[in-house]
Amino acid sequence: MKRLFLGILVVFWLTAGVFAQNSLLEKKAQDFVDTLNRQEFFQAVENFDKSMKQAFPASKLENIWKKLMGSIGPFKKQEGVRTEELGASKAVFVLCHFEKGSLEVKVVFDKKGQMAGLFFVPPAKPWEIPGYANKDTFREEDILFGKPGWELPGNLTIPLGSGTFPCIVLVHGSGPNDRDETCGFSRPFKDLAYGLTSRDIAVLRYEKRTRKYHEKCAAEKQFTVWQETVEDAVEAVSFLKKRSDIDPKRIFVLGHSLGGHMMPGIARDCPDAAGFIICAGPVRPLEDLMIEQLEYIFSRKKEVSVEEKAYLEKVKQAVPTIKSFNRGNVSSFSNIIGAPPYYWMTLSEYKPLDLGKQINRPLLILQGERDYQVTVKEFQLWKEALKGNPNVTFFLFPTLNHLFIKGVGESTPEEYQKPGHVDEEVIGKISEWLGKKK
Image (spheres, rainbow, N blue to C red):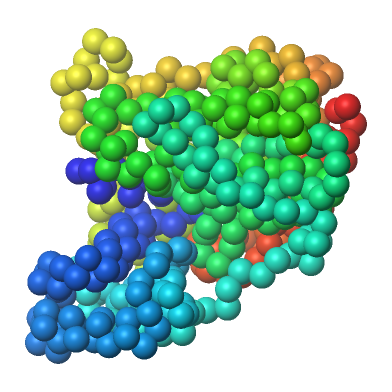
């Protein structure tokens, strides 16, 4: 269940809205690339379908991989992953970097989840710096911070010039996100970092704990959302306070999706932060929003597969059990919908609106009206709970989706497979708001 646990977190209502099957197939494709890199070719072919096993026995796969590395050099790392629908099949593209170049490993899965095709293709158009960012105005530094045993690598973008700068820490949505919160062709955290730092605001972004320490987190039977999200955000603020180029009195924390959901908890545990930003942060219970998201996605499909219907029913049946978890009975249950019971229980105990009412520092809440994962209903719940608080500012963007990328019409999962950037208006609203918090 280790693989399933971290895989399913990607599907929670808080991320890019890809159905569970997609995220599990993406994980299979990434694991397949890992086996190639380790040169474990007999293991690599285990999930091939019958025709693939005939066409690509382990010996032939080994020969192809070694010829490939002979051409473009040793394997360096994986980066992004994306999925395309191919009728009843799905193609997963894993972007891979080698010493002399990059390519995508295209893995085709049949409806049973077996590998039915394998291709090595030129990479799709890479991420490009958005037009509102100017890389000549800042520098980028590799950093490492965190508790002993849980140190996290990241990047700090800092404006050029002398003196100290305000800084924003970026906190991810659910799932094992990278520092850019890569989703398909989009990198919203990199957009935010480059856009805001071009406006004289330093930004810290980092690899999420569940990405850097995948197996270690999965092995924790009492792994909690606080460990997943809150602790490292607090550590990031402490790290920044010690730097001579960052203004210690102007360090802010921005949370997207799950990061926004947990922002009141971060605020409680981080008295050193000057203020907070919630981007598409949900309020209601995760298990309820999972069902709403899945129903929305399926209602817009021409045909819902048997597997998809079964998964939705599985989630619906699990909800009463999830809601029954308490400290007296939680140890008697096994993983449910991919996560440990203890994780679900600590999420249920957490009351974002109650803690949100206790925040007495500046708070900015942003929401895209086209967001089907964290809808305007969540935004309205924040507004109702925090009305009358002079420290809170709200902005609703009519044309933006969950990633704060502009679009037209109803948002769908397929939208995330198209290149896009965080809208410039979002960058402007954040920098304008922060500029007033001197």
